[in-house]
Length: 73
Image 1 (cartoon, helix red, strand yellow):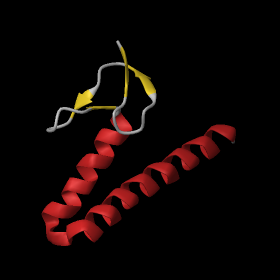
Image 2: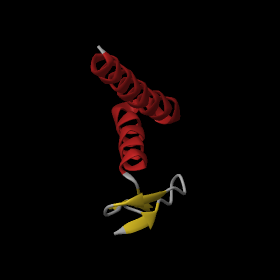
Image 3: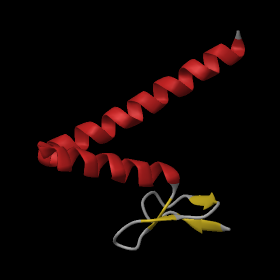
Image 4: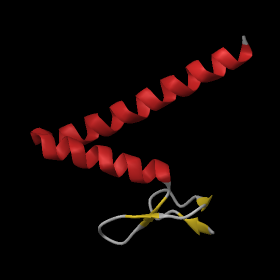
């Protein structure tokens, strides 16, 4: 089943992850929303939400780069 993500507007295959507000999200946007929520819950407010979400995306990108580099060796 394909759908359009309400967060990034990309067409994605698979089933959507539905947020508490009813938005259909792709896995990347859903994880970003969860990370932002975790930042707020830990007492960081808006700044904590942004920092936690950014940290999650940086960790993922570093893992992707490492995996790609290992595949080239």
